Image (cartoon, rainbow, N blue to C red):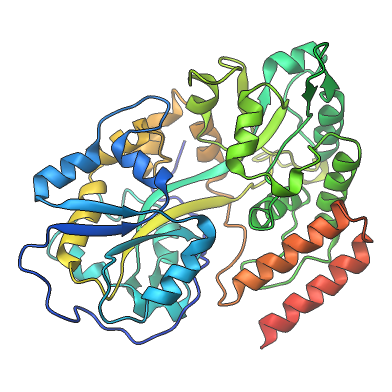
Length: 438
């Protein structure tokens, strides 16, 4: 059962930037007709109900009709977030009004780039705020008393497995320890009579994605490459254990040969196509795997916790902490339509609108909606059980992008290029310590 006030130690990593705060600069048109929102297409689909498994209500169109405005969506990729805030944040006037950012991402340096949402909440409160939202997430979105963004989408990662393949390969159920994870993946790697290769396990492998994957896999041994209090653990045994497991899986063909380029959409497709026995992905993908028409494994996808080394099992927990992710939406300080921008945030935060967003495939940020999902969605149950223990993959830091690159490239060097594990991690850890000491 999810606690009414989830204690989630979550830190928002932020997008790097600095500049003076200019609130309400310039003269806004009396009746602005266009609101510009910067965010990935998948974030827009949650509102429109388009390109989702079960097409639903278009609540974005409902907002446009209710407020007499056209929303112009500016699409970007994950890696463009920092560039956009660096570029737009210092400007006293911007054509863009709102921007989505991933948590973990705003440090103290970016706080001046966002309008304080507390200024709007005072006169236009949101139903159930803050009690129906994770206290930990809201704490990390607050810098010096300033609320930089409103939670929009959240969740955790879990281990999904194809029950049909497991039965065919004689595997009894989800692995409970890292050792079982490796052995199950090995046994579930095979070639079908038609020549089609089935991989025992797939996970994201790009440099960007490895910031999360490395933390999640290391937590099977209670490790962290960089803790929330900035202790560098990249050169410790849990991280080496995780990377060496990947190296073995890669060498043995358990992981695909193009693993270092695999993004989320690609590993999801491999699992949906029945080409992977296991996938490490969002716990909120039950509908995608089990109900979508283009899924070849409908009804066979099962979800479980990430394993935990057995000596760390307790009466309360025999699974690893995974990691928490969340998307937020904030108002740029240079926006000329701040009141209208707040209207969109307020509208999309209404309980009934957020529930429709859940039906459109969103991971709920309201505690009450997560509780509502638990009975019918096994992934929601996993998330609810993880929330009291989980944290983001990395803490916020102005040079977090460089740290992510160092970690990811070190993993690639070890797994693919055969570099020695201890030496590579030691050198990389020292580089990160040097960055943190500057």
